[in-house]
Amino acid sequence: MKGLLLALALLLAAGSAEAGTVRDMLGREVRVPERPGRVVSLAPSLTETVYALGAEAQLVGVTTNCDYPPEAAKKPKVGGMVTPSLEAILTLRPDLVLATTEGNREEHVLELERLGLSVYLVRPTSFATVLESVLRVGELLGREAEARKLVEEMRREVAAVAQATRPRPRPRVLYVLWGNPLIVPGRDTIMTDLIRLAGGVSVTGEEALPYPRFSLEEVVARNPEIIVLAQHGLNSVDERLQRWRHLKLLPAVRAGRIYGIDGNLLHRPGPRIVEGLRALARLLHPEVLP
Image (cartoon, rainbow, N blue to C red; front, side):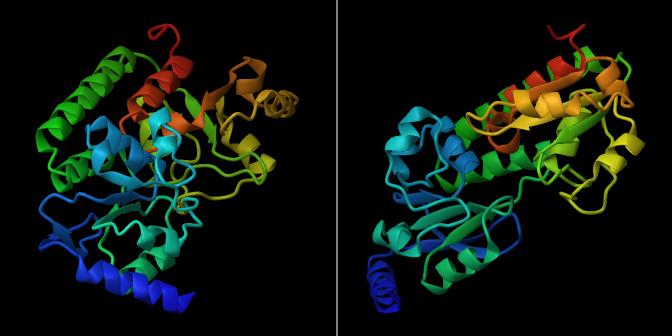
């Protein structure tokens, strides 16, 4: 296997286009062709961004997790987001690999670089850095004008949500990223930022760890007024909602304010995140965002 990877890497190096050096969102120097013609995306958010910019013809490979837009499912697969196949990636002979700190493993990035591939990392940990990542991908792919237009549309949507919710009281929100074990968003995470933008306050937003595990006792101590459970894929949240509804000590339970939400809209830091933000804001403030 190592011999095959080496052979593929040498073939890739022999056919690589003239490249310049840019810095990714971690400040790392990355050699990138002026307009990459063969791009592999290692995250659904990046795949969605490429499609939203109209650059899907440059996309030669995606992960098995990349299912939106539906056309993305027809692209060659390179394995899962956290379990990519290095051989499959090298076989596609990409001149650029797009990856993210929010889901891709550092060891895979380093191994791809050791094999001679150019790997550009984005780091979307807030709404502002999501916008920055869209602009950077647009610049890399020669789609600067499309990226600026898309970012302006996203900014307008967020401004509309903020204007609608600004006069309202900010409820205390428990957002459950994962139910078992119970994982919640902490400080410096995109979900904590989105809850703020939606007109709420995350009850776990000051936790030092980005994604700490919580116990039910800790949840009760935080006294949330609203509980939002992320729905993953096609799995129903009905059973999880029932488990939470027996915790009558919680204001959210007594008020009947426990909701499910499509995690793909909120956990994929790409163009559709504004849809997720509006959906979240509707749960927090149905009186102003029906």
